[in-house]
Amino acid sequence: MAIRLGDTAPDFSADTTEGPIRFHDWKQGSWAVLFSHPKDFTPVCTTELGYTAKLADEFAARGVKTIGLSVDSVEDHHAWADDIEATQGTAVNFPMIGDPDRTVADLYDMIHPNADDTMTVRSVFVIDANDKVRLTLTYPASTGRNFDEILRVIDSLQLTDGKKVATPVNWQQGDDVIIVPSLSNEEAAELFPDGWDEQRPYLRVVSQPS
Ligand code: BEZ
Image (cartoon, rainbow, N blue to C red; front, side, top):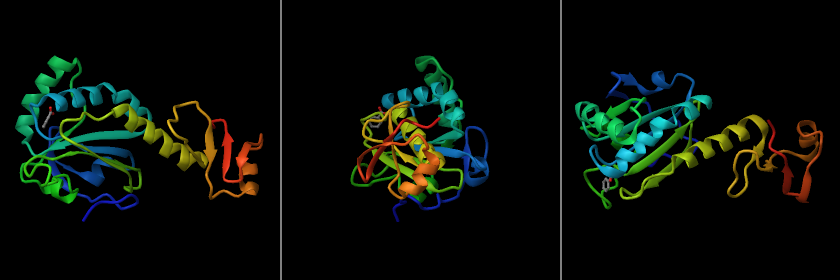
């Protein structure tokens, strides 16, 4: 069955390039980005993994661990990692799950047989500190994902959790945000004592809280 927003991310045991893990223990109260790529030694995947490695400090600053997956072996991942470092200029600094028997790929519905019945699609799961799925995303094999966008969504989710604001279209760090509709004006006045721009009763705009 498909994994939906708000579901508990399924736990699993797997071999990775950093040794065997049990997923929930490996996360241990952190957020996580679990993402699949179609195949080792392929061009788009090479650029994606290199760029994700370059973003290591950005993910760490948000309390997020990253972990990749394909249905290749850990041995292949290790060999490919040399190419990623050589061509992308950054060594892979997060674990890559080897899933040749497709255990995790099937658990997370990462193989879409009508697209390709052997390789994983480009799935992304953003999972919060309580192991709840907060974002799912599926891209086709030939389109590299935008990992800056994944960071942007994590920023938005963490702002909503911590500050009771939602983020409008094309929001970027520092832009105005929107008070969540579930907050009454009385509750909003406590959290936003400087007030807000009430463009409609349901559209209450405030500066991004720090
Ligand atoms: C790639 O990573 O370049 C790729 C992988 C599978 C199909 C097409 C492209």
